[in-house]
Image 1: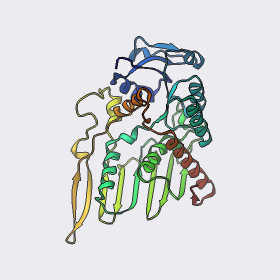
Image 2: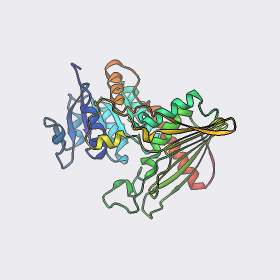
Image 3: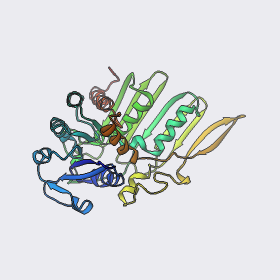
Length: 348
């Protein structure tokens, strides 16, 4: 692009380094102009010519910057996004969008009044496994769906002293960390549910939750979303059950691991998954259960920033509509209400 989007990044932790930076580098449509780091300057390892800024005020008064990417802890998202939009910048917020749906609505109204792009980094919309199940559902390969399970489990049986996500802070805990991915995918597939029930726990005895199960109820369909930090065994990432059979998919999309290891997203076959990790379709034929391996669709994280570029330069829709991101936060609020009162709640 002859006119790359001048981009500034707020925060330079794992999210910035492992996701945003390599994807920005792989695109000709962006130039990282400045980075806000309070004390360190290691952004220069990735961008030798970058301008290091120590406070948000100085970053926002720079007229060169067009786009702000916010990768700070969750409780800073609203304030920083509000200030960036107020300074007439386009904004990408790392998930979760905000801590509350009221905050999300305020940002949406401000972005509309300023005529600036506002979007959220929901990268797992572009996971190969999600793209695969979306295709299977569209083609009705398991018939009419009756149940879907989506799980994102890990194992770490100790707490980290330096981990803000495990502190007693607004927006901390696994509910705000992983549920935005699973809820966003569910909304894309099925829309908003009629009812919801949630069980949220701190199984390791910490200050923040580290386990949740959220049941979303639709007419003739139940969607179960689960995540936990005490799951050492391999569990399915997705399970689809329908009137004609089931589909079971193990393993996580390989893009995160490849980005973290320094692989270039521009490489040929980026996002392709090896055959050993393909999911299995189970269907009945003449009284017997037959199985079939289903090739995983290629994941495509780079497409996110191409859509951001088109949104800013060509006025197209952003890759994640802020109203959808607000719905994700709204369902998290319903989940917290359901857990608090131990009951199914109506989604209104």
